[in-house]
Length: 613
Image 1 (cartoon, rainbow, N blue to C red):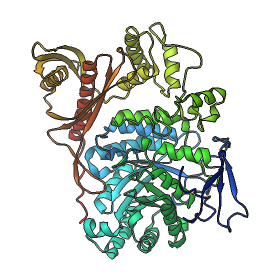
Image 2 (image 1 turned 90 degrees about the vertical axis):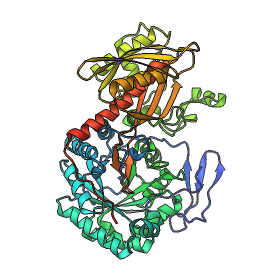
Image 3 (image 1 turned 60 degrees about the horizontal axis):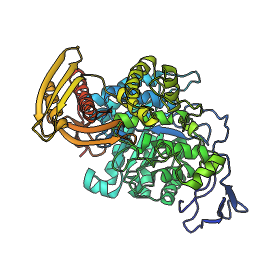
Image 4 (image 1 turned 180 degrees about the horizontal axis):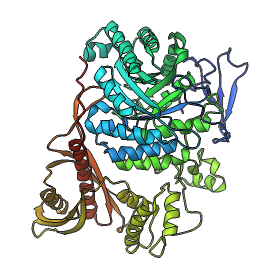
């Protein structure tokens, strides 16, 4: 349990000296400052975690939220999340994720850092054109945001990418902490203040009426300087002020106090929306984000599965479900516009496209989040699910078990398969279902019962794959102790032409990979290789993940450091044959790399922005 509990935004932050104790196993005694409540507040664990709500998303105004209890969700999976090593996404994958983020109902999608590369620019532009104009029957359409450093070239490129959206936003930033000023920027406070002010003004001059400003490393910045620079960018036209804990160093009490102090001391703060962006280096990103909300921030910057730079970011699913469960009773009535039933599918999509597996005990979306093995827990669950679950799995788009008693096997039809996949959070079109159905049949012929884990592996292998440049057609390997391992591989290219090659190697996977390299003629370095059985038993499906890097290096510009970074590409495969699974993963990674290379070669160039001196 957390060491402190934050109060409603209507009341001051608890003093660090305030105590928290448990007088009874079913309640929390929370002593508030004497000027807040006349008596202690009692919060019962038996409260309904999902209270019915008729609250609607308020009208979008860039610098103002009409309902003071509404919290905007700013998703940066496609920008900060993609900075995770090995999480390179193609334009198609980014567009797929953006479409699903719109289904989720996120208020702002930070679609990328357009100045990083030609592909990043085109991906943000495509998202702005499609997702940024897909208005639903209630008038909802997400804001499409592009990140830029505080220089004219970055800002211009960002605007050229996002301007096609109905609600475009430019998010620009510059560091403000002493260590960044001295060692990274080598500039004085006065110089940084002038740059921030002039660049926000420049962004507005382009025609963008929604400009977000971030003082990078705000958590370690001098607060008086923060008040000054934030006040100046407000005058220059900023509509949202994002306060990032860039290195994840603050405690919840510290971060909440920082937000409260900024709200109390920054001139013009009533004319903007305050935002939070919390990194997870000490495992406190969700706690800090909620602390910021309690102190008055009304935009939360998050990512699906909490992915991101280093230890990641505040997790969308954790922040949103915390507000849904406790917002009405503990957080002063806070709520979001997120349709939580799309959380599971969003999590799976991001997991498969990035190749970053979700840990089993991850809150909300981990494989064990709704699993109960202890006998005492199982007994309680059988009597009443509320004994050990505060969230219903159905609320996030997941059903724990098939209560209709249907067991999938080789005689099961498409309807039963579609229903089970829907229960698992997958909504597939007819073509995708057809492809999955025949894969399912092939597995069911060899296994008496096809489990949920098998289905998830099959969907990942079929649906969450990059555009096909090369497709595995046939594979034959010979291996053992009597001689060299050999592999013969037949691949089909995008034009339908067959290519066959044979190679030897130290084992069946090595020889198969070398045969593929002879066909594709794309030299790569294999950085990571891992395999897991999705179920127990000798007939389990094997899932493989590989991470590769092209020897002809492909680079992008890192948003925070400005350095050129090597792009890496992940691939996944699934099969009951471990060699086939391995080859599928390798071909998938190559397809992602080649698709990315083709986009860069065919699209117009975008001028790269030099690092700020």
